[in-house]
Length: 170
Image (cartoon, rainbow, N blue to C red; front, side, top):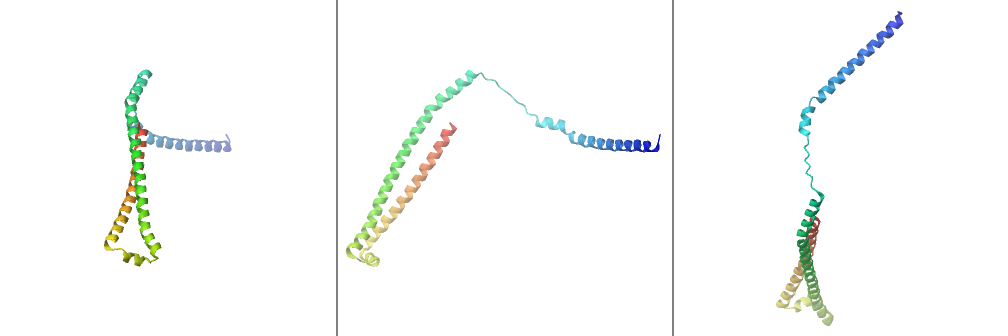
């Protein structure tokens, strides 16, 4: 054999040994990585239970549930509609009363000003203690009515949301 052939075989053998050492280290790394697999298999094992129910039985149960719940849902919807109608009528009534009160409040000083052409201080002086108290009470009542309207509108919105949730669940 020639020396060049021996060196090329030597290079091949050293490359093979290097590859073999890399392969052994890879096997060791993989072995360390999979040593816990049997335990993980037991931990992650899922048990699936299937209970087969015939389609007619399932359909009958759905129909029974629908028949049982359907009337109750329609009764609840009717009640909710009636309540919403009552609240809407109450809101309209309160709005009308508030507008009436606001009109009365704006007419009293307006008439006094237009008929007598006096300033605000003169109108305030003209009103006696009792009239001032009545005007203040009317103003407070109007504010209370506005607050009641806002609160009732919020209650209507809340009832509608609750009703929608109940209908969606059913």
